[in-house]
Image 1 (tube, rainbow, N blue to C red):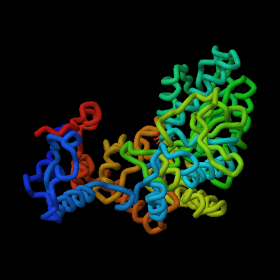
Image 2 (tube, rainbow, N blue to C red):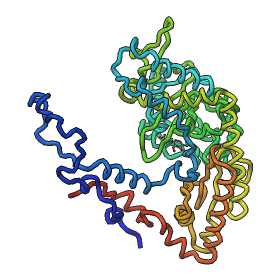
Image 3 (cartoon, rainbow, N blue to C red):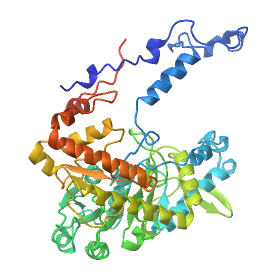
Length: 487
Ligand SMILES: Cc1ncc(COP(=O)(O)O)c(C=O)c1O
C-alpha cells in the first residue's frame, strides 16, 4: 500500500528533537559570557537553537548522509543528468580561502585572481563550443534558457520584429524548453520526430514562417541521437529570420568533436553542473553559462567580465543587456570547479571524456538490448532509451517497477517516462567515469529484474523494500509534500 509522504516516519529524530538544555559542548569552561565582550544592543534575547553535544551532531548528520543515495555511493545512470564522478581536487580548489572567502562586493582591483578565473572560463567555453562569448550569470540550464529567450525577444524588438512570437521545440525536448518559452510569452510549436527519432528538414519547413522567433534543439537529442540534418535545419530557420538555440545539457557527448557554433546555433546553454564535474541534484546550486554568437553579445546578462590593459573588471554598464539574471557573481565556486576541470583535462582530455561517454553508452545499450526493447536501435551518443512496453503488456510490469527494483539492488534508477515519445521509457546514461565491471553488474541486475517480472511480478510491485522509504504515492508526494517540522 502506498504511504502518503507526510506519514512516512523513518525513525530519525530531528536535530531539534535530539537537543537537551545544557548538552552543548563547552570546551572552554572558564570562558567569559558573551555579555562581557558585546554591548546589549547587539545581543539576542533568544536564540532558539538546539543544544547538542558534538558527538550527537556528528552521529546525526553521518546517519542522515548514509540514508541517501548519491554518486559517491553507487552507479547513477540518470539519463540526461550526466551524473558522473566529480574529482575531489576541484572541490579543494574551490574551497581555497582566496576563492571561498571573497566577498562579492570586493573591488575589482582586489579580486583580480577571481575575475581571471571567470574570464578564462568564459574564453575557454567560447572556444570549445564555437560561440563569440558566454555569460556565467545564469544559475542553471533552465535559467539560461529563459535568459536566451529574453535576449531573442529584445533582439527582435530592436529590429522591429515583435510579430515573431513562435518558438519551435521538438517532441524529444526536455520540459524546460517549452516551459521557458511559455514563461517568456512565446507560443510553443511542438515538432514531431521522424521514425528514426530525429527532426527532419521537411517537418521544420512545415512550421517555419514570418512569425518564427526561435528553434530550440538538443543535439544529441534526448534519445541520445545526433541530429544529422542540423546544418540544413539551421539554414532553414535562419532563412526564415529565426534564431537557433542549442540546449547543451548533452554536451558531454560532443566535446572536441563538434561545436554548436559550427552547427549554426546562435545561442546556447551549458549545464556546467553536468558536463564539467560539478555536482548537482535535489534542485541544488547549479551553473548555466549562456553562449551567444557575435551579433548577440551586447544582449548578454550583466555583469560581464572583461580584460582591459592587462586588468580584469566586471562590466555593468551595457545598454542593450537584458540585465542581471541573478545577484552578484552567480555561483562563482562552480565557475572555479569548472575551470579546474577544463584545465586538468585539456583539449585532448575533454575529447576523451566524450569518447568514453559514448563508448560506455553503446556498450550498455547493446547489453540491455538483449532483454529489453530499444526502440531506436542504432549507435547512440552518450545515452540511450530502452522501453518496458512489452513487459507491461505481457506481465503488467512498468518502467516504474523496474526503476524501483533497481533501488533495492543498490543502483540509482535511470530517468523514466522521458522522453515522452517512448512509452514506458528508461533513459540510461552511464557517463565516462564508470568501469566496464560496473556496467556489466548493472546490466546483470537489470536483466535479473526483467526475468523476475516474468516469474514473480508481485516482487517488483512491492519494490523497493530495502530502502529507507518504500513505495510512495508519487502523485501525493509531488502535489502535497509535507515538508514542515511540527513540534
Ligand atoms: C536536456 C535538458 N535540457 C535542459 C535541462 C535543464 O537544466 P537544469 O536542470 O540545469 O535547469 C535539463 C536538465 O536535466 C536537461 O536534461
